[in-house]
Image (tube, rainbow, N blue to C red):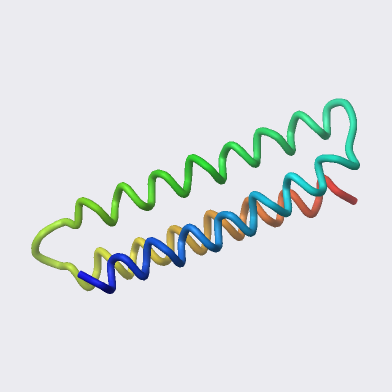
Length: 90
């Protein structure tokens, strides 16, 4: 189960990077943009919690497909959040 532990740590690291980026950029924003950035930060928190929960409850049967789908979801979710954060900070 060491690979599960490592995957959780990697998801934690990536999401903390995105969250940290959002916090730093939100300090330079005001008004509506700041609120949107805060919402994106909380969305990153929620995504991290959801993915770690999914790892803890692996679906029996097609484990390989389960983890492939999980990695895709993490990548797409964090990439979407980061892109939105970058657009807001312009």
